[in-house]
Length: 132
Image (cartoon, rainbow, N blue to C red; front, side, top):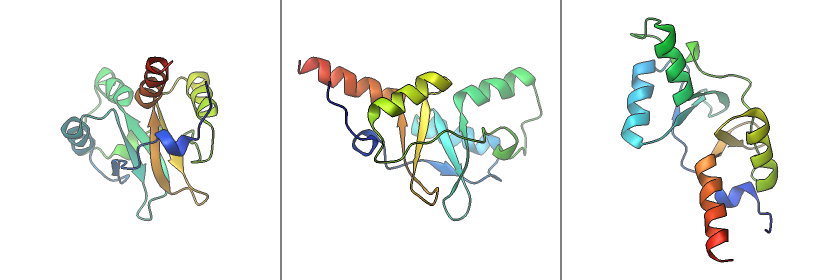
């Protein structure tokens, strides 16, 4: 299978929230858009963290008060990222090694320009297999 760049598969329309967005608003955004994560960015669009469905499982399991709680309380920080010019193989290996399903794509200034997910990778592999 020929390796391609992340830029070819990434979704460039990334749903973002700011760190002070309330958890319940982030959850509503995810449900309304049928997505498994929101990327948390500062006012300049730089990556601050990510909030995923896995984080919501933790929120519910911990039974912490959720009303009026900002996403910054639960988001994952130190997020693994990819660059648009990285190979899909590298991105997939990172996701497998770390055990994640969402990999934000950033530019040299850490601005979010896209996201690649396990769904994107699965669709690509499926398409390749169908044409083989």
